[in-house]
Length: 432
Image (cartoon, rainbow, N blue to C red; front, side, top):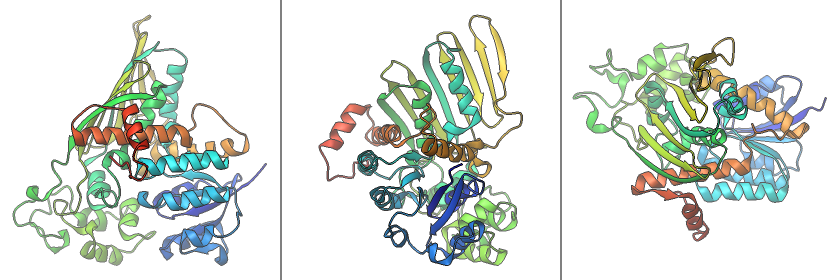
């Protein structure tokens, strides 16, 4: 059995999760590049990496001649482009965290470079690799629904998740990261195209930041929760409760402290000095907290996508075809299939037990699934329809960018128009 040697660029939560799934027989993590020592040390210890293969920055590692099979790029979104392009130049296959890059131009550059160099890239659209969505795709492929006509899909971000990642956290400010649709929901734009199996033709979108902003801060609330907010007991977003008192929430605590298993003293310092401790209404966030996207596909199917912060969390989907329909609840791991022919409902459980659909639960099995598929893709030349390879991912990123442009400009955007505009502005970021 061939063992794939892996190098890791970015040892934050996503990088750790993927390499945690690489401790078996198929992979060997041989180097890590990460500026934060405590995070770098975690990877080094787990995978027994020698000191000389641990680097402060990706450029130190990638200046070496190629010495592994796969490079994982799991830096923050805005820092994907340069290490990805350098790794492609060196001939590495990539496991590339989504989004590909914060601009459409950079997405296309990476896809073009990979094609030219002949390297394989899987983009981490991990929903494709979950048993839940795999089963829905199988039902469609088995013609249980007939021709798919329309899809309603909802991503319920969760109010607390929104506050952590998209208000206080790394993805709350578009200038520092990207728009909300790209950062959070390019997963979902991808899954819609995958299920419908047609290229998007045109999009429209509406949404805004409505709640997590300064004018909604209660009178007398301090800038930092730890300074004694009079509303702290009833506030859903009290940073003391979420980060300091909830010692079981490793995801929140690790992300806030940028350390693995930080102490309470370290968390308290974070709450006094960083945005993770700020009042949720007084941060520098500007991304939307709710958005809808309407999509028309070349095969005539249509879809509506709804992303909102104001819920518990989870994903729900209804797929309607000429011979039947299905309703899926990812959080409950159930699919209700209704046949027009038999007029009967069939309840399907893709797994015998539930898998959490959020990031803390491995995206419903998708994190492990993409790592397993990566091995098959590279070693066995797997070419099944599950693959989130760079070419189709770049096309689906175009849909995401076009949808955001439609939201900002309050109009319908055709994908051909969007792509042609980007061709005419080669020096432009083509972000909107």
